[in-house]
Length: 287
Image (cartoon, rainbow, N blue to C red; front, side):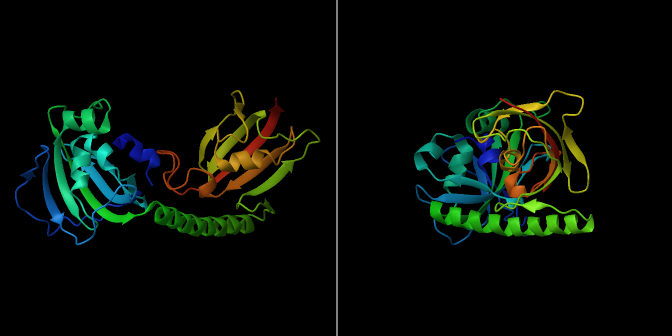
């Protein structure tokens, strides 16, 4: 596993590393060649294979320019695999020395970071002869089942918040919407007698996507309609569900909870984390 996957897999928590009162001692050099020093030494357990480590992570270049920082909504979660981590470069070897509750600073040459841990080209503007400093906190260690239960609890809480916001919006704007068990709200603006799509059909859809404040983040207006195979995960879950509620030729508005859209990661820079999305759609074709 490489750190680029952290941005997809990885669900993110506030860095939470209090640098005030940090250990001001010198960096130590590990046997594997990375420099590190403890910010805080916790008293938690070390991970074992099959468990999931929830990290707070922030990293900067040698100019102290921020390259990445986790948030409270989406911590960096990585399944622990000792053998894989040993082969994933010095960053993952630094992760291996951390127990639950530990916070450390890690300094690794930029070339080594991108070649061995990120496994990606060095982006323009970053000095390849410099170094990357990582601020890493091991927030918690969970079993896979504990992680699933924790995710389910967070998802349910977020869904309830989203539904409350959607219902308040509908009430304030005198909109009467239908609902589904998943939390999707929808309004049929123009009904049609055409067929309804089934999973596996290719559909063509015109759309305008908006945030709850009315900001348009994407639209097919003036372009060809988007085409996709329905029910195969090619689009967000709210679309897969909502489009199958429409007859060919129908127009509708969807109010989609964040969990049926882009969830905690959002879709930077246009869709913030945990965004409820509104779509005006027209089902123009079914193949």
